[in-house]
Image 1 (cartoon, rainbow, N blue to C red):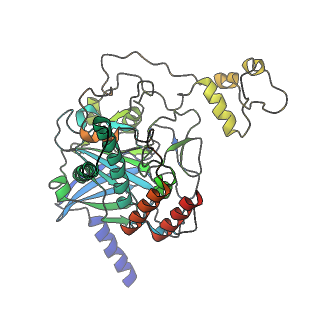
Image 2: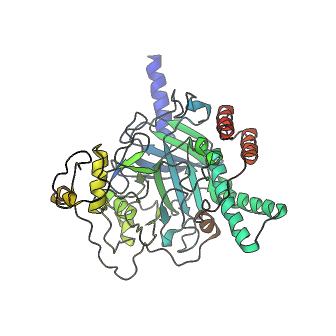
Image 3: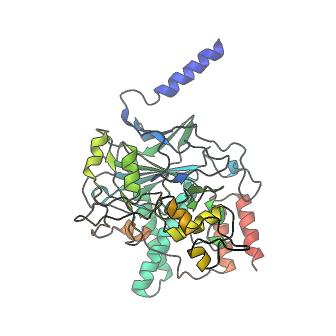
Amino acid sequence: MLRMMCFWMIAVLFLGAFAGDDVLFSVEDPRGDDFGAGAILYPANGDYAKGDLDLVRFEAKADRKGTLFRVVFANKVRTVGTRTSRDSPEPLSNFLRHDFFNLNVDIYIDTDGIPASGNAVSLPGRRIQLHERTRWEKTVCLTPRPPEARSLLKDFMLKARREQERRRLGNLNREAARALKKEVDQLVEKEFFFPTRIRVRGNAIEFLVPNDFLAGKAQPDWRYLVVVSGADPEQRLDWRFMGYQGVVRGLMIQPLARGRAIEQFGLELDADADQPPIVDVLYPNVAFQKRMLATFDVNEKQLAALPALPMVPWNDSLTAAYPVEVEARPASVSLHVTERVAVANRMAGDREPSKPTRETRDNTPQRGEGKPVITRSDVVKQGIKPPTRKPLVDAPPHVIPTTPKSQVDTLLDTPTDDDTPQRSTVERLRELQQLRDEKLITEAEYQKLRAKILAEL
């Protein structure tokens, strides 16, 4: 009897945590839309299941110290438990302090509501930008390793800033380098926040964003873009000490692979590999999510432009302001026939022909090894055709903005890994030592990375 009473007391406290006059807003997201633009597949391992990254509710509550945000998922949030590193038997709990490991939640907030004001570029690796009308002033990133993510972002932006100054001045002295570091530190402090006060409860994660960052409490009439992605919490182990150049390819995010992959999110056979690796977006309906995530154009070097939406009133009418006048590229018919044949053969486990032959062109079976499992004719007979693009009607709302870039956009959008010279072993060891001293990596990570660096000698 006592156990039952305790259970119901806990349940009441849990359910009532976001009830009352201090609730700022609470909105619902459709269930079953955790597939991005329509073709993303979950990893084929025990760390994920369909529904894990399916955002179903987004809430905010006033707290004495700031705003307590809450994201609710279709499934119970997977905790670290006894899971180990993918590279060693080290428990993930040694370096994951917040008891979740497989997801990121980015919140881009347009606080001023002024079109073309603020920043458009998202965090590295998301492959999205904010719509011209709803650029962001503040970004909150919920991720399993917030201090490390913050450090990686600072490093990436500082490298881009140094490159700017080198091109302008020709060289940098010590004083100039210190001034740039201070400038980037202040910029990240002002515009990015990585929560560390986090609590996992069932299928929900709560996290506090202080008043100092948002200049008060979150407001329901601000515009919010909330996106969910698969997390790579071990990115630090693959960082630049081993030749990897920071976060150019993504900040704590899993990239996409073709087919159903084991360790990362995959794509259906005919899906476009250049689509955003975003699993779910907080939008009133599924069709709008699919349509906006498909507005990218690789040929035009154009990212998908996603609008942020106000929390009140939360209904389908919010999407009417963002029509797409260009036919969205269907996620399942985006590859050329030749490429689809190659992908189908790889997934079937057979070897691709080294070059086109008369036999493959005519759909006549080849003799011996290298016989294709699927030919051009097989693909065409299935009725899979490249999409027909409609001509542009005036200027679609997702064209790259002509508004001058903000400082944040310029730094996040600057490639930094092409011309960077290799650092010496002494420099790499010194930087590794500094990260350990600042407690940004564990002792086990330090020893493992140190051994790898020394092994290259």
